[in-house]
Image (cartoon, rainbow, N blue to C red):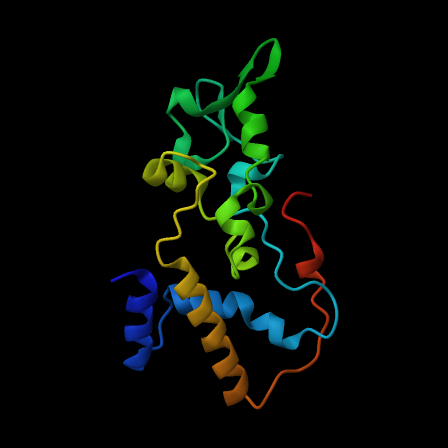
Length: 171
């Protein structure tokens, strides 16, 4: 049973708690309130692809993600008394976004998913550019359905402009 199926069972039991589907529903509920502005635009998943976010360990090694800290083969750079040196892996991480992932380009929920975690993808598939969807599409679709159901229960949506949704994760 994947996370989406488990979440659906929890929801069907009437248990009102945070789970992957309800979290996605909360994230996407703003879509029903938009009159103008941008909707879904998550082109990358996490800090690994954001150019100004790095993890620094006590030895001065730089990593693109908390999950990779402590694994020297995943260093994106190093801080020393002479300055900061970036390694080629940093540039590779910058290119990990859905436009460079064949499966994501074809996926109907790519802009809500962002290609998933590159570290997890590499661990499961052997390639950070090959997504490991693992039921996330179903979770996103169920979350969208739940957000819509909540909208109907609340008598429809107010019309607002979501300015926060117009910011890029790559800014």
